[in-house]
Image (cartoon, one colour):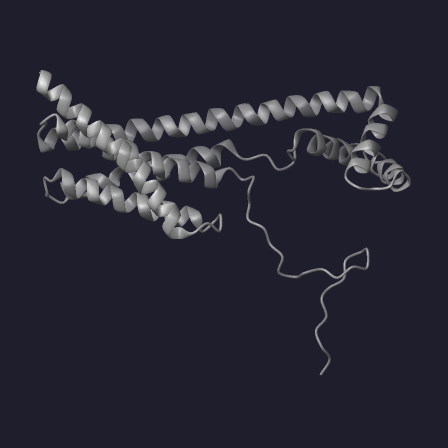
Length: 243
């Protein structure tokens, strides 16, 4: 039986068939992680501060639901606006680079030669590569933008994906500390425990995408969130003592 051979690329070099990377430009992972963490920390801290001020269980639930809705919409709008603004800035830089390619093609081609030389190519190879790339204006444009700005203009993140993922994950994170109250248990500490478990799980889940130790990522988020929750609870107690 003949042995399986790795596929060969157009250059004649073997290609690794299962070499796959995660999507690092889609915009959903950062927004989803940020949304979940923000929902967990902000709403757990919110109900802790309200409960610390000796509010009733109904007031705590009302505050938590209001915080969930306000935070989710705020997160979604913020993500949409920030990603859209970043994309519009990239578009503006692309237009600037396109004008430069049209107005000074030889200077831009020489600029690319020097970029290739700095990457390790010989001057002769760099000149040939730059000449071939500049035969296609769109390809040259994408490469110039990628090299000069560090972004690929054809792989911009979607503002709708960022907004949707942050909205959903914030809402999910924000409802976690409210679970005991919604089940009839009027206990702040059960809500805080639920929020802490949610933080640890979310931190560990995010670590799966970064190859970081799960236990360390979970503990880090739990620690940071715990500080915010404790501080808000103490502020609530302090405010209650002056009322």
